[in-house]
Every structure is written in structure tokens, then in C-alpha cells.
Image (tube, rainbow, N blue to C red; front, side, top):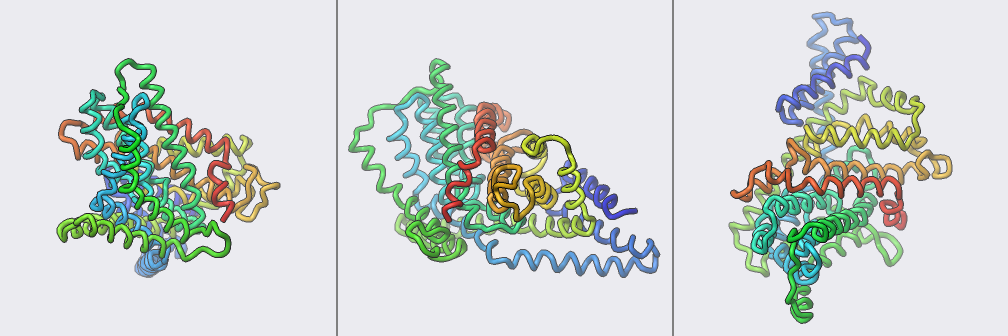
Length: 466
């Protein structure tokens, strides 16, 4: 049997295991190990005496790959970014952000929901985890919206959808994972996430205002805040800007010259700054312990998924599946843009059955080379490319698109993780209620993705300056 055939059979088996409920990390790791053993044994003609040799080589191959990748300095960003988010909660930054957004934006139609969206966007700038963002604002924003008459399902949907912004707006753990898998510059990818993330928040806000204007009593505006009260709300929220500025300066120096450091150093300093803020706000030892434990749990979960998937990725290399898929994609007679749209639609469907990180880790080793080949290759110049951008810029643009699709998958049934988190925090809400509440935001996400595809400069302008 040819390696490609083995690759297809094993990949199909892995998808079956995932659909049946096995965790992505274990399904990918098991499939990768079986695939490696199968390929090495096939080279010996399936001689029973050589099975132990195939098993030994497969185990050594599988053991080397995770260590070589996990020891990468760039992955140390993930726990620091997650820690920033949990410490920011104990530093009181979430309440300060929501209060500032409420005083400045609540006067517009649907103002409290709009305030929630922009507050989650602000918190996303110091939190690398969508789940943490949704959990925090489910406690803060939903009670406020229910007090003035919002439908509880829509209030929950606003929080679940707003939480997804943490996937794009740096510091973003998913962007770091994408950069590691496709071996691209972490700093430029983090820069690329700022404008699309803010753009997504703006589209969400406009959608809410449109609904409030068209449906009577949908989202009553909140007035009565004086200019003095509005300006008084800004100082407690300003530390967010300091943390964002720190991370940006360690990725890209807007004053010219080299950056002040690496993204890893920026993440560590950002975490230290927020830690000092939390201490100033009176954070106790029990709260610090909770923040560290939650960070460790989430970081270990992400690293475990990476370990398992990396074994599967090594198997894909031996099976020659990525190269075969690239050749097939480039042989299609459809336009490259139409093929790209079909790939994004496939992500939307796949995201209904897999978590965002696992989905990207499993698909990128095959899909990324195909998209790059579709554009003309890793080193193609913009003038010779299919999408009108150089190879490195195409890698960044596609990264933002697939991470935006990962955001979309965080709120799609049946396993939209943010929806489960919001329902878990609120006893008065079922998961079905939250899924109904996020339905309008599917339209907003579709519009955002279409505009990012049609106007790549929304994504590429900022990283092009670095």
C-alpha cells in the first residue's frame, strides 16, 4: 500500500475518533503512532519479524518531535499571555473597562450591549484566552443588561461573541500556535491581529445598533452620565493601554530602529506589570494561586494538544499527504480565490465538530502548503502571485483568516466552547439559550470575513510597517 493511501486511511480513522468524542490530543497522537508504525512496517513488506523494528523507530520518531517543537522559545508566550488575562481580572481591569465603556457608549441604541463588545475587545488586549474573556464578562455584563430589560438569550450571545475577539487581538495564544506550526514570524502575526480584531468589534457594534433601531424595545440606551463621570472612568482603565504599548514596543518599534525585545520578553513584562497592578488592588494569596492554577491548566491543555498533533504531523510528512494535497489544489481549474473561499467554508463546517485549537493544528500542516502553492509559493513576489501579495504576506493574511474562522467556531453549535462557558457561569441560562443568542453574530462574522478576503490591506497594513 502506498504511503498516501495509508495517510488517508489513518486520517479518516482519526476523524472518526474525534467525532466519537475522543480528545483531539489523544486521537491525533494515537493516529500518528499507528500511522508511523504502519508506514515503517510497510517498507519491510509487513514481515512479522520486522514489526518490533517498525515499532521502535516509530516510538523514537514520535518521542523526538514534541520535545524539539515544545522547547521553542516562542511557545513560552502562551502561558504568559494567559496569565495576563487572569491577573487582569484580579487587578479589577475588567470592571474598570466595562464601566468606562458603559459611560462613554451606553447612550447609543443597544448601548449596553455595544459597551460590552468594546469592553471585551479591550480586555482581549490583555488576555490571550477567549474562554477566560467570556467567563469574566458573563459575571459582569449580563446582570447589567438584564436589569434594563435585555432578552437574556441575546445578552448571553453578546458576551459569548465578544469573548471570541481574544483570538485575534494580541496577545493571542491561537496566533502564536499558528506561527509555530507554519514557521512564520510571531511578532508580525501579532501585529496583524490588531486592526482585524478592532474591525470585528466595530462590525459587532454596528450589528447591535441596527437591531436596536429596527426592533422596538430591543436594547434601550442608557443616559445620564455627565462628562465629568465619563472622564473619571478613564484612569482605572488606562493600565490596559500601558500593557498593550509594552507588547507592541517589544514586537515593533514605531520610533524606528530595532524592536526593544522579543514577543516573549514583551509577554513576560506585560504579565509582571499586571501582577503589580493586581497587588496594588489588594489581590490575596488565594486569588494569585487561583490565577496560577487556571493558567497552568489551560497552558497544559494547549501543550498536550500540540504534543499529540505534532506526532500526527510527522506521520503526515512520511505519508506525503501535504504535498499531494497541494498538487491537487493547484491542479484545479477554479479561480484561486474561489478555492480559498471553499477552504474557509470547510473550516466553518469542521469547526462545528472540533475545538478551534485542535482544528487548526490538525488541518494547517495540509492546508497551509496548499494555500501557499495556490498563491505561487513561499517566495513568490506580489506581482507574480495569485492573491496580489508576496509569500510572507500571504502567510500572515491566511493566518488571520483561519484564526477568524476559529473565532467563528467558538460560537457555532454543537460544541461552541464560549457558549458552554457562558451557560456554565450563569445558572439561569441553558446552552441552547446561548446558541440562540449568538445567531445574529454569525451574520456579522460572515461580513467581517468577506471584507478581510476582499480587502487584504485591513490585515497587512500594520505588519507591512514592521
